[in-house]
Image (cartoon, rainbow, N blue to C red):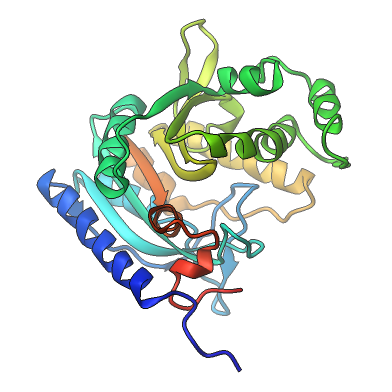
Length: 310
């Protein structure tokens, strides 16, 4: 029976040092550390995230986002949190059902200002000084030779099947885009250092506002940070319109049902907070386990978790 920790004492020591550095970073910027519940009355409607439900009917939180935005609506100001999060997904090299998130929100920031602050934090924690920025459109054009914002469902199926033997009869445009990104583009990003990808398709706005790129194309005010092909951060200029958020939740549930998944109850407390008024802000979540993997040069997430899966 294997009872030993999966992480070395050196890795656990580095995790403690990392948390100390993060707290110092936000203390210097006068960002308040908060704690919110790990379980709540609602899960999430996102069709690409499966929440875990407890026996009492509550849901383990896949992110502290909704609770933190309720604090923002109540006047908390700039806030951050380090917490456990839970998602029902396949265990793997980069995935664990239970993981650690760093999430923070900055009032008066848009996605560009927040990208700069993320870069400042990553420079302090990992020592990187040069950060590339590339739009979602340019990323696809560079690696696959087509504009993802204008590609049809049939074109995406054709492009994917040139490289991947797969059949997804219920798949949407975003399903095929995600497949192309994860299977064909992300492996190529291993050759590149820190890379911010921005201006995602509007259909992938999740909880972000819609803006326009330089050509006038509607895009999601969203970014992701990759380091050596590992997706590390996901950030938004946050949507504050309660009515639009409600319609997005309905669209999520429609998509979930089209994918053969059950619809999720909508978080009415979160929507009530948005209706009360969310201040103009941007927020981001960073996977701390993956960040520690990068810092220590480890290949499997279990190597940085005290008791991870094999």
